[in-house]
Image (cartoon, rainbow, N blue to C red; front, top):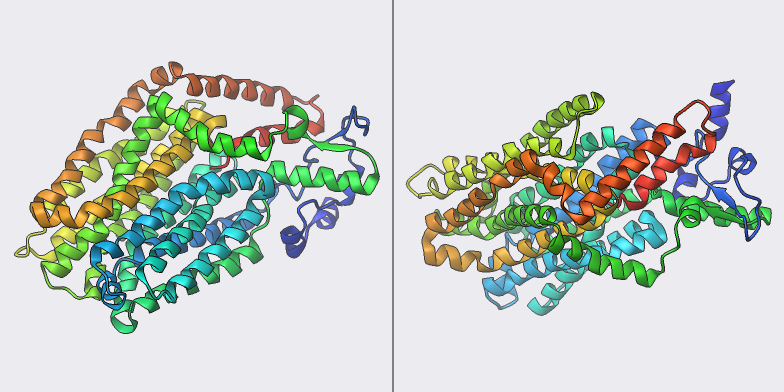
Length: 539
């Protein structure tokens, strides 16, 4: 009987993709609180066992969606770095200099810094699915435009718009994961996903170097277009809407139209509605309020931005160290990133183990936001170690394997630090987590845009050893941050306005969940914890 009921409630794939409201008989017949009038509308929440609730997706469906989002993020991060390998060929064809060609990387990252301000509010208004389709179509179109560019000005401008659109999949993916997975599973899902935005910049030069050798720089742009276009088709046809407030809002509107009664989603009922103007105002202001008033957000954002900027400086540095100094070809020069790529994969494997340990500690009721910093403590040691290693083994007289191998601990350390910072900010700021992560992401993209601009001059003027030593000293100066937060984070959070407020609200929600889990709790309370979480869980 239960199996037949479950089958009758199952939603087809294409209905899941095309219909956000999904009015099944169970949804229509459910007893909602309220009277169905303007003054006392029916309150729409998830019904028990609701198949449209993203938390109730099958594990196989969740894993598939996570893999697709990882691949879409990989395609845009691949596009960010693959561009620069054929810089010499672009300069020759478009009659410009290598320094001007680097502006294409600058404008791409600048676009990624601006994009979240646009896509974040739009995803709240129109859902994640529509934003993904529109933005990823833009990525593909602008990549195609880069392929046909006849001037460096057109190429640089098109790269900016590509970056703006490309920021949507990178920011949306974290939100989709938080929509589907509970906190105990989310860390593992993020570990599997997070490698893609960082693996893309590592494998981009490897692929584009060999493609440029055989087909020229326009074929590199063509590969980017084919990659992002394929992911646009796959993502648009396989990823349903997952943002719970938007889904319930659409369902309430459909119920009102079908039944003639007044329905309102629980978010709109429990909280005053926010206009589009206010959403954009919050997107512009709140990340910077947190950045300048919360020491935790400031320090962790700067730390992650330095590591990210260092990664992007490698695009220019490796060209000088391996192609100019050692005389390698474009294809062989790209292979210098193999060490970083292997390190990132190793970092994900380590992060999975760390997350399993976190789940064990969490099950015992002993987990705090500071527990997340264990991975960051390990990564904070690996990053400066790898940079010193690279700086003083890149002599032409020393085997290239020695300096390439230095990328292994760098890639591992970067993934561990990134995951630790992301999870810490989510756990410490809960309802403000989206803004805290936005501040971190914007600064990270700015550093990624600026660092490559001065890398060639730095390496030519200081030499390949001391130029590589500078980021090593910066990473060494930041190394204590995770250790200090692990030891004193709780004390610091208690003295910061937004983190203290987030902790207070988290405890209130936890108490509410406990009360709702008692046997006498009404079934309609099933959706409240999810809505509280997803309302702010954009990252």
